[in-house]
Image 1: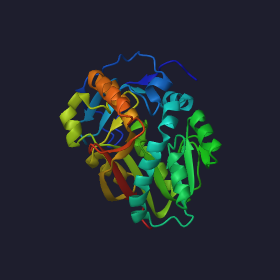
Image 2: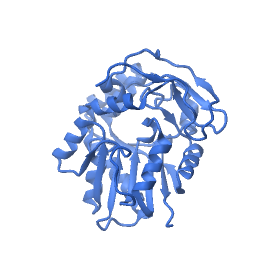
Image 3: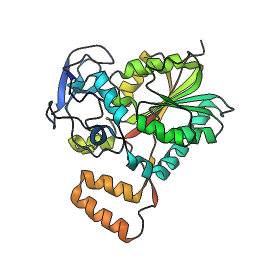
Image 4: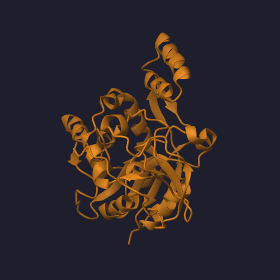
Length: 311
């Protein structure tokens, strides 16, 4: 892996192309800080509040981080990620993805053996859930470690990215991106690649953080999703605009929660609020609730169902 940190200075807005952005949150890490894949880019990273400068486009309002790692550098980091804690929290993720699949099928219709592609599938939990519900489910993922974990469970996986895989056009009925679009150096380009992979009338499902949610506004700079691995921070408005620019029509968007084990949740709180978190971790352990699944919905994570036109 290339360990030399190479960054692009102030890239043009990925949504409107303007080059005029204003800083809204100053950097908390120096530009020269060495990036560690497992600490910074793992799904279970606890690097809350550690980020570069965050700016807002004066033209369209898209919020993004600068300076930015060069695309190949980001891909190298994700290719090298290993994240055993994600596997340990597998049961909670199964509940979450099962929860997401049911409303998805109200839009897409039942599986019936149709093809589904999960982009940034990591260890393939959603691929597994979708396959159990009758989808011909595939995942695509850059992490060699995650690909190995998924294939050890017999899942259909492609090593790489949506752009590098050169998939046949119009070959999938559904493409999903769970907690992916915020990590991309070119989200508009990836959404367009998703449009190419979908058959006419197919659905793209995108799940990400909502910068304009009440919880995000209350937390301000302490919003936990301000992290070095997140390159873009969407609102419902800016994500809608980007999906429409990529050729989609938005069918629905709304907040969806997730399931976390109490022990895992308390460890996340400890990373953000150490004093409160330590008390919470002790209490959870004392009461024997470490493995209790809890549904968490603070309203700052939302899902969008977007459709490719029939013609």
